[in-house]
Each structure stands twice: as structure tokens, then as C-alpha cells.
Image 1 (tube, rainbow, N blue to C red):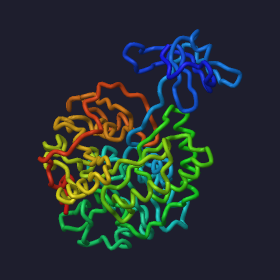
Image 2 (image 1 turned 180 degrees about the vertical axis):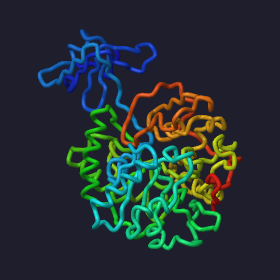
Image 3 (image 1 turned 90 degrees about the horizontal axis):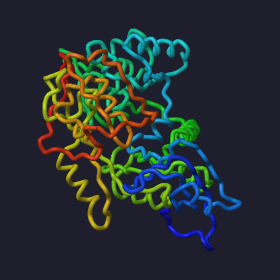
Length: 432
């Protein structure tokens, strides 16, 4: 029996689980029992061998022929946002622009008091012919209030004309770096903005209800435990870190967080110095850890904004966009990786997990490839001749599932020096 110390004079195990135990060890791929003492796996072996680890206070779980696996680590799920933010109109399960507009109209009728209507979850694959929608589509439903619909990423926002006017985004406004506006033939914004830092475009949007976010995150912790997810990597917003620390100190945090700080400063914070301060105040050994800084450099394949080496097969006029100045990115990485800091930097390169052949996949498959937050990704190559409906598969940001390791991509990718800097074409619309 593989052990981390014999029980002898030491306490018995706190927990013994019996079943078909996958150990990960090449010479002992399947065991029959695992013994846990505190936060340490004390032993791994047969059912008979596990008996000596059982004392009067040991909890024993026998799953028969069921499988026992190590907990899953979700490497990129945006847990606190995915569970914490609740939008007015849920578009994740809406298929087609007609259903999206019907849900917006229904909410607007039921909530005449809301000054801002927000929704989340639409995808370009839901639009006829994969064309981007326009403000006019929403104006026909709601003219006197702002409507903001965020894509699944969310690396795109679709706004009505009232929202554009309130944010002073009509006409030809200056846009922050990494943000592009789709424009019509006359040069006017169509209502769709792409890129990163989109939340800052609409300062009139109320701040999320913190207590509501806390309640939703608590429900998310239960969902993670139910599905066997025991740790996540998440760019937790600074204002939520005190809540996670409080849960830990009260013994109620059931999910380990490795927090990704922002590689560069933004209107919402970030940068080396702030992340160091957050780690000092809110870090908790083994449970709330730091050490990674995240910075995005392009968009999403499902929006045709991920930077590709070759044009998109379904829109040959574009190879995506880059959202970060290379010199600024390089300076930020150098500052973060000095011996005094020694952070792990992860520039988020969505397209790097997509080989130039990836555009030949259906949009739905490209969407699932990037939305999936599992340890490994699997993409079934499909020819353009057999694409079928673009909505044939859909990934949810708040769900996990096992995916076989036949993936053609991983999330640990680096940017190519040949990455394009052009903006995405919007199917006969001009981008500026």
C-alpha cells in the first residue's frame, strides 16, 4: 500500500473512501481505497489494507464499483462572475435573434421601472447568416431606456440607440485601446462594440448588487461541490476578495481559488503593486492563493475577433484583432517577472489555441472550444460541407463536464510575433 507514513502511533485517517480509485500513478492506476488525514492523502491501496486506517472517528464512504477521482481544477471559468452576476435577460439558452428579441421585449413589458435592461449570453452563431445585429433591432422594442446585451465572452456588447446616446457613443467618439466599433456605410456606430474593457463604455450602468452576488456565489460553491470541482483559477474582482476571505475564516469556503491579478492597470484595478497588496490582505494558505497575472491580447473566435494567422473561413476579410500594444505588454511582463516579484504571466491569447485550420470548424464548435473551462478540450473537426446548424452544440459558462484528452489545443499558449493587428470585418459593415 502506498502511504505517506504508517498509522502506528499516529492518528487514524479522518476519511477513507473505497471504490475504483484512479490514482494517477503509472504503476497503480486503479486502487480500491484512499485514506485521508487532514488535508493529506495518507494512503492508497486495497480495501483490506484500508482497514488499519479506520478508527472510531473515521468517516468511511464506500461507493462500491463507482469511480473515485481527484477533484477537478477548473482552469478558466470566471467562477465569481459566472455565478455572481445575474443579468435581467438570460440569453444563454436563446437560439436565434427572434427568441433573443422576444425575451428582451417580455422583460421590458414586465419591468417598466428599470432604467437599464441588461442581458448576457448571445452569440454570433445565433444571428441570421452570422451577421452582427444592430441597435435598430433593439430600438424597435425599447426606445426610451438603455438596453445592453453582452455576448457569452463577454467580448462584445450590443446596445440600443438610447444606450449609445447616454454613453455619448453615437457619432465618432474616441474609444479606449482594444475596443472597436462596428459602423455602417455612413460611418455611424451600428450598436455593437468588440474587444476588451467594454464595461467601461457605459458608466451609467449601476454597480452590481453585492449582497446578491454573494448569495449567488454561495449557490455556485454548492454546484461546484456537487460536480466534483474542488479548485478554480479565477480573476476574482478585488471587491469580492474580502467575501472569499470571510468565508474561509468562517470555515465555509469549500472551493480553492487561485486568483489571477491583472497584468496591467485598468479602470477596475490591477497591476503588480495592487495584486501584491491584495495577496497580503486576503490571501489564505492553500485556499486563496496568488501568483499569476492575466492580460488579454485578442478577442474570441466565435466573434471573429481572435487573432488568427490565416483569414476566417466564413469571413475571409478578417484575421481578428489584437487589443494590447506589444510594447506595453512586454513592459508589463518585464515588470512582473523581476526577481522581486516573480509572477507567472499569462497573456490570454485565444487564437493561440486555434490553429489556422480552426476557422473551418462550425462556429458552435469554435465557441465550445474557447468557452469550455475544463482541464482538456476536445474539438471534433467537421468539414464545411457538413456544418449543419451553427447552434448544434452550446457551452454554458456555469457548467462543467468531462472531455476526452484528444484535444488539439491547450490553454497554455503563447502569442505569435506574426499575430495580425487588423480589425475584424463585420460582413459588409465597416469597423473603426
